[in-house]
Every structure is written in structure tokens, then in C-alpha cells.
Length: 112
Length: 114
Image 1 (tube, rainbow over the protein chains, first blue to last red):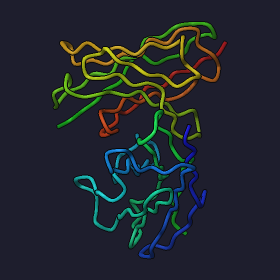
Image 2: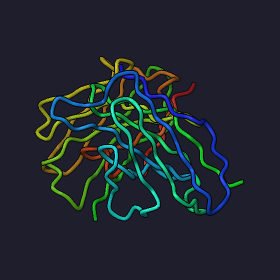
Image 3: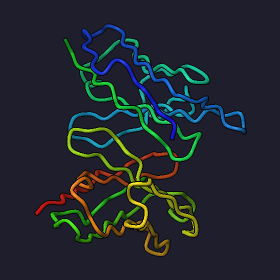
């Protein structure tokens, strides 16, 4: 199975400051159709996961534009341009290129 | 509004069985693949199983193969997970999710304990 490694484990951020989460895979996530099936999820405390970004950089409807995804091959990044209080939670990357789908271990974003 | 509502969780003894349900609304259920994903207390997300739109193709994570069975009833817009021979390490919140994992249900807690 593809191993997804996220860093850091914990990310204390000052309100209004940027935040960046790294996600690395041990195999290329480029599928034979040319797409890269890398997804980012947000899980707020006590809530179920919510998809934020699909295929590396496509923001889901209703997701604030302060969230952006980038990367290629085996290295990917989720950036929050200016962290707000509602962004507190755990963020997960997931690959859907190779079967079975696998998740990163999560990055906990908290306010300093 | 697209909505998924899980039910059927609870406390069960090791070796016991449980059937989870996920009722879908707000979209054409029969057109989408569906997944089950679980999250042990305080832990991360683990994909468990998926089923294609007509129910003829299924896949499972190795740790549940032979014990869990995913199925669906497109006439009832409902996804199921039959869980047999439950073990302590199956304790988790179980979520259903549509297609490319959007959206997710609110989850149902399964606790396996004597």
C-alpha cells in the first residue's frame, strides 16, 4: 500500500498568519489518465471529515479561498494564507491513485 | 442537499456481529460508488471498504476481509456494512462517504468490548 506521510504532526499558528502542511507519498500519485488523485480533508473537533481540495489543487464548493493545494508526483502542500479560529482541527491528505486509498496520519492545527 | 446518515452502531462483545446502515438523500444514489471509512478513538482515518454503483464490485482493507461485507440497496438509497467476528481493534467511528469522499456522514460508533 502507498504510505502517506504528513508533517508536521502539530502546527500552532497565530491568528492571521499563514500555515503550511506537507504530505509525501512513497510512490508517484500520477495516474495513467494523467490526473493526480490527491485529496485534502479538514476534520474540526467533534465533526466528521470534510473534503477541501481534490486532485491536488481544486477547491471544493464553499471552501474559503485562503485554502490552496499544490504539488506534484510525491510531494504535496496544503496552505492556509491567513489562519482563522474556525480552521482549528486536524487535516488529512489521502491518495486515491493506487488501490487501496490511504490517508496521511494527520496534522493538528491549533491557535497559539 | 446531499446527506448521508449512518446508524446501527453500538456495544458488541468480541466475536459478535453488527450491521451498519447509511441512508443517502439529495443525489442519485444508484450512480455513485460508496465507501466506509473508520476512525479509532483519537486516531486517524482508515479506509475500510467500497462498493461500485450497481453493487457488483466490492473491495476491502486486508484487516476486515472475510469478516465484513459491504452491500447496497439502490431502491432504498441505503448502503450497508455487515460486520461479523468483531474484534477489539474494530472499535471505531464508522463513516460512509460518497464517490470521491464527498460528503461524509456524521458517523456511528462501534464499540467492541466484553
